[in-house]
Length: 158
Image (tube, rainbow, N blue to C red; front, side):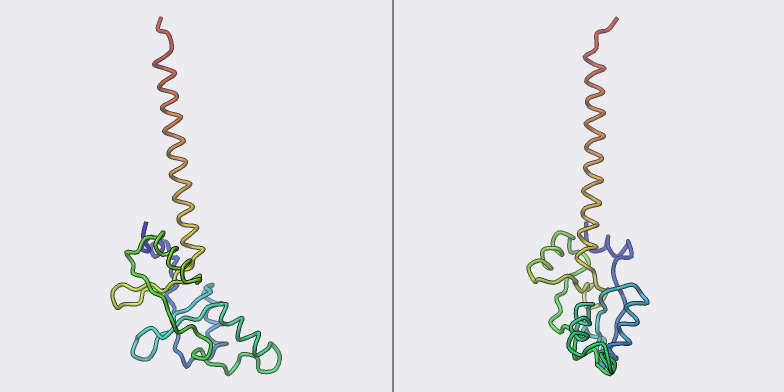
Protein backbone atom coordinates (compact mmCIF):
# COMPACT_ATOMS: atom_id res chain seq x y z
CA UNK A 1 0.00 0.00 0.00
CA UNK A 2 1.45 3.36 -1.04
CA UNK A 3 0.80 7.07 -0.58
CA UNK A 4 -1.41 6.86 -3.69
CA UNK A 5 -3.93 4.89 -1.61
CA UNK A 6 -4.31 7.85 0.74
CA UNK A 7 -4.58 10.24 -2.20
CA UNK A 8 -7.25 8.04 -3.83
CA UNK A 9 -9.21 8.08 -0.55
CA UNK A 10 -9.09 11.89 -0.44
CA UNK A 11 -6.76 11.88 2.57
CA UNK A 12 -4.19 14.27 1.13
CA UNK A 13 -4.60 17.98 1.85
CA UNK A 14 -3.96 19.82 -1.40
CA UNK A 15 -4.46 23.45 -0.33
CA UNK A 16 -1.55 25.85 -0.42
CA UNK A 17 -0.84 29.34 0.80
CA UNK A 18 1.93 31.91 0.31
CA UNK A 19 4.59 32.92 2.85
CA UNK A 20 3.24 36.48 2.88
CA UNK A 21 -0.37 35.46 3.60
CA UNK A 22 -1.77 36.46 6.95
CA UNK A 23 -1.73 33.67 9.50
CA UNK A 24 -5.30 34.26 10.69
CA UNK A 25 -6.61 34.10 7.11
CA UNK A 26 -4.67 30.88 6.55
CA UNK A 27 -6.22 29.49 9.73
CA UNK A 28 -9.67 30.40 8.37
CA UNK A 29 -8.88 28.52 5.13
CA UNK A 30 -7.75 25.48 7.09
CA UNK A 31 -10.85 25.54 9.30
CA UNK A 32 -13.18 25.89 6.29
CA UNK A 33 -11.48 22.93 4.57
CA UNK A 34 -11.36 20.83 7.75
CA UNK A 35 -7.60 20.33 7.57
CA UNK A 36 -4.82 20.74 10.10
CA UNK A 37 -1.99 21.46 7.67
CA UNK A 38 -1.30 23.52 4.58
CA UNK A 39 1.71 23.57 2.26
CA UNK A 40 3.36 26.93 1.72
CA UNK A 41 4.48 27.70 -1.84
CA UNK A 42 6.68 30.60 -2.82
CA UNK A 43 5.93 32.74 -5.85
CA UNK A 44 8.01 30.45 -8.08
CA UNK A 45 5.76 27.54 -7.11
CA UNK A 46 8.43 25.84 -4.99
CA UNK A 47 7.73 24.53 -1.50
CA UNK A 48 8.70 27.15 1.06
CA UNK A 49 7.38 25.35 4.12
CA UNK A 50 4.35 23.94 5.88
CA UNK A 51 1.97 25.42 8.44
CA UNK A 52 0.19 23.09 10.84
CA UNK A 53 -2.29 23.53 13.64
CA UNK A 54 0.68 23.23 16.01
CA UNK A 55 2.39 26.25 14.39
CA UNK A 56 -0.78 28.27 14.82
CA UNK A 57 -1.09 27.19 18.46
CA UNK A 58 2.51 28.36 19.00
CA UNK A 59 1.70 31.74 17.46
CA UNK A 60 -1.48 32.09 19.51
CA UNK A 61 0.37 31.14 22.68
CA UNK A 62 3.07 33.72 22.04
CA UNK A 63 0.88 36.52 20.67
CA UNK A 64 -2.17 35.89 22.85
CA UNK A 65 -5.85 35.75 22.03
CA UNK A 66 -6.77 39.28 23.09
CA UNK A 67 -5.93 42.48 21.32
CA UNK A 68 -4.46 41.80 17.92
CA UNK A 69 -3.50 38.21 18.67
CA UNK A 70 -2.26 36.59 15.47
CA UNK A 71 -3.92 39.07 13.10
CA UNK A 72 -1.18 40.83 11.20
CA UNK A 73 1.18 37.87 11.61
CA UNK A 74 2.53 36.43 8.38
CA UNK A 75 2.77 32.76 7.51
CA UNK A 76 6.54 33.00 6.91
CA UNK A 77 7.07 33.93 10.56
CA UNK A 78 5.47 30.75 11.87
CA UNK A 79 5.81 28.09 9.17
CA UNK A 80 8.19 25.18 9.37
CA UNK A 81 10.78 25.70 6.64
CA UNK A 82 12.66 22.41 6.88
CA UNK A 83 10.09 20.36 5.02
CA UNK A 84 10.44 16.61 4.79
CA UNK A 85 9.15 15.06 1.57
CA UNK A 86 8.33 11.68 0.20
CA UNK A 87 7.21 10.51 -3.22
CA UNK A 88 3.81 9.14 -4.19
CA UNK A 89 5.22 5.62 -4.62
CA UNK A 90 6.45 5.53 -1.01
CA UNK A 91 4.80 2.76 1.00
CA UNK A 92 2.67 3.72 3.98
CA UNK A 93 5.07 1.82 6.24
CA UNK A 94 8.00 3.85 4.87
CA UNK A 95 6.08 7.14 5.25
CA UNK A 96 5.20 6.30 8.85
CA UNK A 97 8.86 5.48 9.50
CA UNK A 98 9.96 8.80 7.99
CA UNK A 99 7.54 10.72 10.21
CA UNK A 100 8.52 8.71 13.30
CA UNK A 101 12.25 9.22 12.74
CA UNK A 102 11.79 12.95 12.08
CA UNK A 103 9.39 13.44 15.00
CA UNK A 104 6.70 14.95 12.75
CA UNK A 105 3.00 14.31 12.16
CA UNK A 106 2.64 15.64 8.60
CA UNK A 107 4.53 14.72 5.45
CA UNK A 108 4.65 16.67 2.19
CA UNK A 109 4.05 14.50 -0.87
CA UNK A 110 5.67 15.13 -4.23
CA UNK A 111 5.54 13.36 -7.57
CA UNK A 112 8.88 14.30 -9.07
CA UNK A 113 8.96 18.10 -8.79
CA UNK A 114 5.16 18.44 -8.57
CA UNK A 115 3.63 19.11 -5.16
CA UNK A 116 0.75 16.71 -4.53
CA UNK A 117 -0.20 17.68 -0.98
CA UNK A 118 0.27 16.82 2.67
CA UNK A 119 -0.67 13.65 4.55
CA UNK A 120 -1.16 13.12 8.28
CA UNK A 121 0.38 10.37 10.37
CA UNK A 122 -3.03 9.46 11.80
CA UNK A 123 -4.48 8.89 8.31
CA UNK A 124 -1.57 6.64 7.31
CA UNK A 125 -1.90 4.63 10.53
CA UNK A 126 -5.67 4.33 10.13
CA UNK A 127 -5.33 3.13 6.53
CA UNK A 128 -2.84 0.45 7.59
CA UNK A 129 -5.08 -0.61 10.48
CA UNK A 130 -8.08 -1.02 8.15
CA UNK A 131 -5.95 -3.09 5.78
CA UNK A 132 -4.75 -5.26 8.65
CA UNK A 133 -8.32 -5.80 9.86
CA UNK A 134 -9.34 -6.87 6.35
CA UNK A 135 -6.47 -9.36 6.26
CA UNK A 136 -7.47 -10.76 9.67
CA UNK A 137 -11.07 -11.13 8.50
CA UNK A 138 -9.97 -12.96 5.34
CA UNK A 139 -7.74 -15.30 7.35
CA UNK A 140 -10.54 -16.07 9.82
CA UNK A 141 -12.86 -16.89 6.93
CA UNK A 142 -10.24 -19.20 5.38
CA UNK A 143 -9.70 -20.99 8.71
CA UNK A 144 -13.45 -21.45 9.17
CA UNK A 145 -13.74 -22.93 5.66
CA UNK A 146 -10.76 -25.22 6.26
CA UNK A 147 -12.23 -26.41 9.57
CA UNK A 148 -15.59 -26.99 7.91
CA UNK A 149 -13.96 -29.02 5.10
CA UNK A 150 -12.05 -31.10 7.66
CA UNK A 151 -15.26 -31.93 9.54
CA UNK A 152 -17.02 -33.01 6.34
CA UNK A 153 -14.12 -35.17 5.16
CA UNK A 154 -13.64 -36.82 8.57
CA UNK A 155 -17.33 -37.62 9.20
CA UNK A 156 -18.26 -41.31 8.73
CA UNK A 157 -19.99 -42.09 5.49
CA UNK A 158 -23.16 -44.12 5.48
